[in-house]
Amino acid sequence: MVAYSHMRLITFLLLALTLASCAPNLTAGKGEVIYKTDTSAKFQALFPNNPSLQSQIKAFRQVAGAINLHMQSFMKLPDGYSKFTGDMKDTGGVSSGTFIATKPRAAGEANTEPLSVNMTWKALDVATDYVLVSVQSTSTDPSIDLTALENQVFTALDDLYPKASSGR
Image (cartoon, one colour):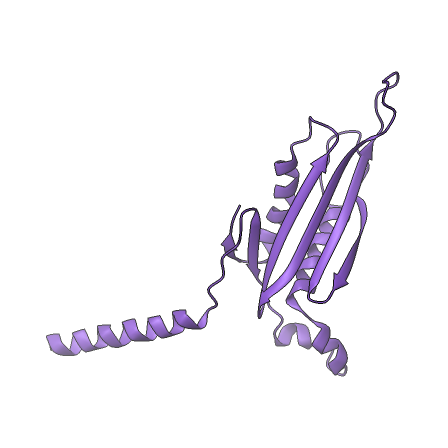
């Protein structure tokens, strides 16, 4: 009886190791996050009669669309700043975007250039259904908390996709 339970335990452990080895071993770099997406049948079903569109459903495009929507519609910027404006582009297996928000300087300041926040992001496939995302920000306004702004993007993605690896 004891030998039988040990055999069941060993079989279970071997099965668990086999299943664990099927998942890709991905590690995000510093400041990056890898998300697990789903380009399976539920997304393919959106285009049942169009195989060419089905083949274009890539994980990085799903994530890029989510980032783009969040940047343009939901980012919370400090008072006085415009909404982010920018563009998104696909190049091969990478989507990227650059967005800028501005704020006029106070009247009477010697420098008349508006204050700005620039955010650049990148989403690329690193394995089937796994997307690496990075966001870099700069600002001419020293009062801007760039990490807090970047966290808004990652928090929105965290709500949509499970993290596979994080370097943040």
